[in-house]
Amino acid sequence: MDFTSLFRPGIRATRPYSPGKPIEEVQRELGLDSIIKLASNENPEGPLPAVIEAIQKAALNINRYPDAACFDLTTKLAAHLDVTPGHLIFGNGSNEVIDILIRALVSPGENVVFSHHSFIVYPLTTGVHFECGRPVSLDANDVHDLDAMAEAIDEKTKLVIVCNPNNPTGTYNTRAQFEDFLAKVPPNVIVGVDEAYYEYVTADDYPQCLPMLKQQPNLVLLRTFSKIHSLAGLRVGYGIGHPDLIGELHKTREPFNVNMLSQAAAMACIENWHEVAGRAARNREQLEWLAAELAALGLAVVPSQTNFILVRSNGDAGKLTEALLHKGVIVRPMHAFGLGEGALRISVGLPEENQRCVEALKEILS
Ligand SMILES: Cc1ncc(COP(=O)(O)O)c(C=O)c1O
Image 1: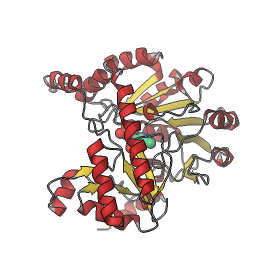
Image 2 (image 1 turned 90 degrees about the vertical axis):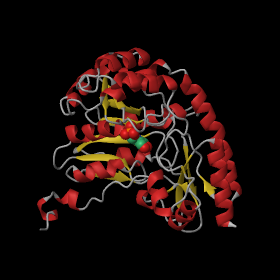
Image 3 (image 1 turned 180 degrees about the vertical axis):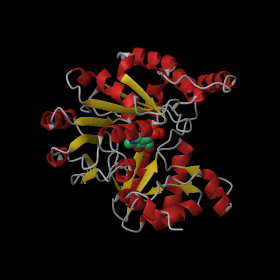
């Protein structure tokens, strides 16, 4: 039976999300003993001992449903960010908050503006939700073209998503660019700023959006515990916005969308927020080392404010990825992101992992 015809056109046209290959899959397929994964922008440093302890303690209660309101987690994060609890919504990863935003806001015929070469979930989610995506190209420097994005807004636009810094390019929009953009966005269009990597940013002119919320009630910030906090496997992300707007979003989320272990782990991360600066500094040091080594190999390196680097080779990134895979190094080719055949994204790993990646590339490219 052909079930495809039963589904909405947007779903028929969508290909499932294809994540970075898990280590176990490569082990199974290639029979390699030692494999490193630099493909999904995860934190190579494991979870903090306090996080493991919190999970173990919480595990004793998993016969009960989690707190549907994430009360303790919300209270703790609100105090940390100096916002009210009403400003916050948690999701099963920030991915879910993005999904909630799109589903809650957009009716058939309306649209969502985002950058074409950005987080792949924006086209995927808008694709299956009434094909409401309106992608706009990056500028010539691989940066969000905020002027073009503002121009793409029309009377049917409900949401604009700005990924800052951007995945997969690692580039960012400056405060001046962002403020200029905000001034052009009508107040009834929601601006979602995806700040999944904001803790890694070192640029002085990066916009601090949280204090802007007071003057800009149409702003929603999207953040996550998956990256610098090392909780990718537990799926906790959050949105920050005007309480009236966040209140509407709460109506559409599933009742128990953040599980008990994830809530406990995220709270332990907040209690240990002082670890973030060291993690960011170690990432920066390795990012700079890796960028210099990759450039020395003749690859074009896009300057990054994140924990990953976009590089462009002259050849076929798919083949290069495959050759690296056979040497036990998992990276991500970027053709699915529409960045050209030679584009490859490499996540920053531990020092020894980055060295191994560079050695493998040297052997392949020589
Ligand atoms: C830009 C961006 N936003 C959101 C996410 C989703 O993160 P989460 O794990 O919180 O769903 C990612 C994950 O890679 C990302 O790169």
